[in-house]
Image 1 (spheres, each protein chain N blue to C red):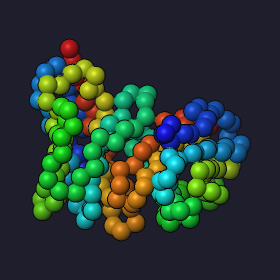
Image 2 (image 1 turned 90 degrees about the vertical axis):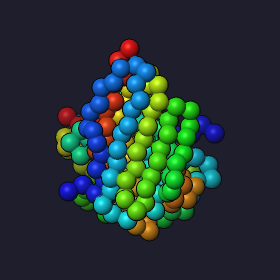
Image 3 (image 1 turned 90 degrees about the horizontal axis):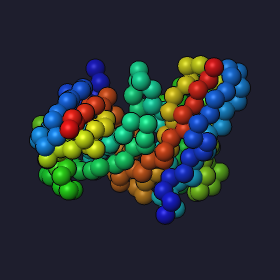
Image 4 (image 1 turned 135 degrees about the vertical axis):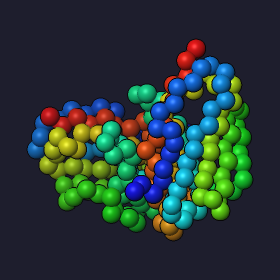
Length: 113
Length: 109
């Protein structure tokens, strides 16, 4: 398996623009997680899905952030409108079960100017 | 107060030294992960454990559930071990991870 795939790897955008991050989990994994990493706050869970259903979105910063998982092999994290404070590395991870180890994608480095 | 605390925050060692990174947690967890993050790179899961000890090559992870403490040991450290090591606990019944701030390890040749 190719592992968790994220795209794009780097994104530079201007404040106010819409940003869409994409993730393809490992086939057969029922859990998908979106994380954000910044120097100030470290790694934070934003939202996670079980069998394509959002389970816990309490980490989503505000209404500007939304995530979807239309099928078992694809998820998106959208920021609209983007702000400079959204600049971070966004990781997607998947796992077979909630207590199993998680496999992380390479991350998307987002810069909002 | 962070629910998962790591120490030390930064660690510099000479090649060949035995290294220990500690992780303490104040919440009930069902399992604990040790993750490795190389500079500019992604995150790799090293261990997931809920009791006892696990070993993989030169890496050893231990956990004491009663004392709410886990350690990651690296034997015969090497410059390629230089990375940030993060411990994370599975919190509650939902499966989400609670992360420590990480320990930045630098191994000098």
